Amino acid sequence: MLTRTGRIATGVALLALALSACSAGSSTSPGAGGGTTGSSSSGGSVTIGLVAEPASLDFTKTDGAAIPQALLTNVYETLVKQDQDGKIVPSLATAWKVSDDKKTYTFDLTPNAKFTNGDPFTADDAVFSINRVKTDWTISLKAAMNVVAEAKAVTPNQLQVTLSTPSNDWLFRMTTRIGAMMDPKGVDALATKPVGTGPYVFDAWNRGDSITLKANPSYWGQQPAYSTVVLKYFKDATALNNALLTGTINVIGTVQAPETLKQFEGNSKYQVIQGTTNGEVVLSFNNAKAPLTNVKLRQAIRTAIDHQALMDTCWAGKGTLIGSMVPPTDPWYEDRTGDFPYSQAKAKQLLAESGTATPTLRLRVPNLPYAVACGQVVKSQLEQVGITVNLDQLEFPAAWLQTVFKDHDYDMSIVAHVEPRDLPAVFGNPQYYTQYNNPQLQADIKAADAGTTDEQVTSMKKAAQELSQDAAADFLFLLPNLIVADQGIKGLPKNAITESFDLSALSKG
Image (cartoon, rainbow, N blue to C red; front, side, top):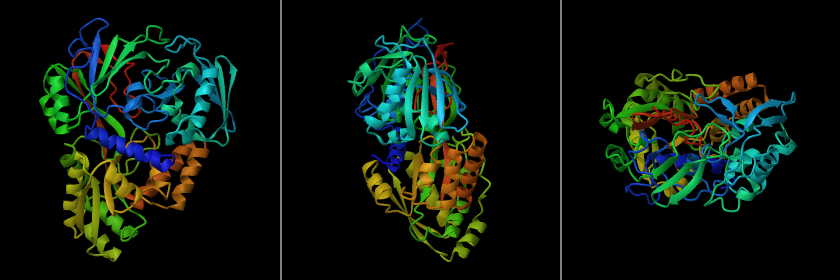
């Protein structure tokens, strides 16, 4: 996966894997650190139930959302990070400034940070980390660093990065895994012994069961409230829920079946946290294949879908209706749900205007619970206006990635896209599986990246509007972030809009 297209495929695949609770070789036996000690013991442990166990701990060479979920922010830190509202805020960089030509970034670095092997963190390490993305990383995410022309240490605590061309996107990407700061002495065994500057130290990996992190005693920031955090992996929603009910874990980090929340809601032992994510559940169209080259047909499909009813059925009403490929935590979000109000009469009118009054479409979805459930609703609603839908389930990931993503052998599909700020990748690249080719949209995306902050917002709003009105896809809903935890555990991340399950704010109530 060396292309931008491949990078987005990874994001799609991993979110879907997470939602289907497909962790590799997980078990339901108690993990290290126990379950019930976390919320009451002074400096004790907390155990968090997750899915999709990492295949490796080296995210420089192994794609996978599970690796940064466990390690980014917790073990590895970045110069800048996102807060819970999506704003870029300081991390290892205490401040930064940008030159008038928007090509040179100067970062002031904290003088107090140390790597977990004892080495001090300096601007030379930042230069090493940035350059290493370009020379040693193999995953396709590395392409976001190609815009860097030079990185140099001005002083031990000041870094200067010069871009070859202005790019608003670059600073944002530095909040992701490619911005992880690494020690030159700590990169020889990244797959098994990560070395970072974060509040936690990697302690142990019980493959097929759990990863244990310990509080970093020499952390430069605020010390963690818990001395031990165990990330325990489960294969299915039932096992995950039962682990909390029996005290094996303290937190369900990602609720896999929203309809099961009722067993926790109203129970004083537990707290239910609902926030948002970057995961747009998209009814994608093959824009290069007839009959979906016809804009009137695409608009008819959007108009024929009752999105609220669909979300109620597919995901227990949990989520957000958005109308385009922008979540509310992005600076250029606009509510576009009114672009195509649900109306069977209007859908039939648009269908007649399309010249394909009784089309037959193949809807090929991955065999994942949310996709299958939503696919059945889409099929039912479209057939009510005269569109015949042949619904196929493809084994995920292999069959779906080959048939839909690579071979483009489909008319429609349903999948969750989880890469942050992914509108340009999904719809700005005609080679992507959606095969959407709109020169005006591409120009707007380019202008957004090169312009001022205000121009970026204006251009991206314009792109989202064009995308919606041209019905390049239908945007079913935005996945929620759902967490259930023991009472007394505070600081859990309400919004899952970064690659990390951030443990740094955990505290005891």
